Length: 143
Image (cartoon, rainbow, N blue to C red; front, side, top):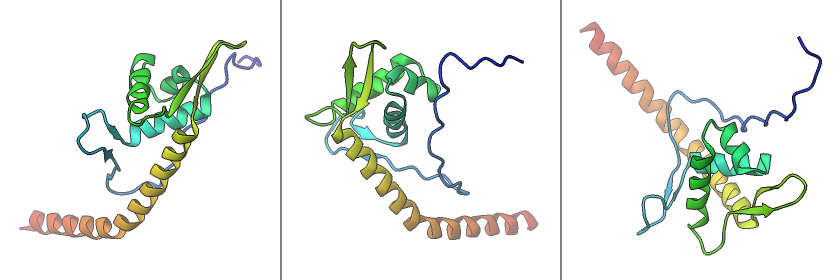
């Protein structure tokens, strides 16, 4: 085993989310807009990764996607509003990169806040529903 450090740092994993016995994802569709005019967990995770890594390429890699896919998703979110959510940093010693704009940071924070409120609200109802479905399935299995 080598004592050498890796040449590039390993990106930090995305923030953990509480595990639930059901799947619920918040997706915001902008009325009257094209199908790409939506924000959901994937684009938000990508924007958070850009914020952590300072790079669209590194953000995409950290989420297991190609640079092209990451770039297309960032391009889509940059066309949602009259101002970009992610901006390029040109040049410099490291060749540039990307960062969230203040509007991008606000959108990510607002999305995560709304997501947390939605999950808290839905948690009890979905747990009760899941319990009813499981009980019904168990009864059917005994019939």
